[in-house]
Image: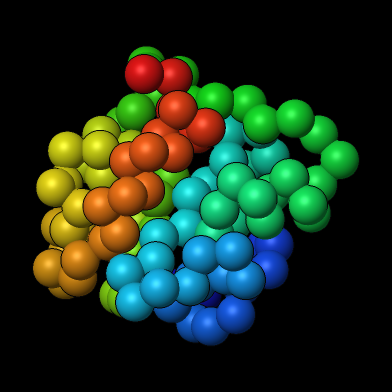
Length: 106
């Protein structure tokens, strides 16, 4: 499965020019355009529309991509994962939780 990552990715593990530390390996599918971006800044700089947050009733949707193993996670699984991929065990940046409100209705 080859999922297109839009925005400004800099490697195959979904790091981008804005967030590129070792654990920055998550891409989010944006509800507004059904496209994956490494971060909200990439979306903001690459589109001409405002972000539409994922509503809680859609948290079962596959909308988070692990850049390490390319597994899509549901929003619910991502938010409750403890910053770890449920498929391969890769550690995600735990500081991403500071940005959840930019993607998801909490």
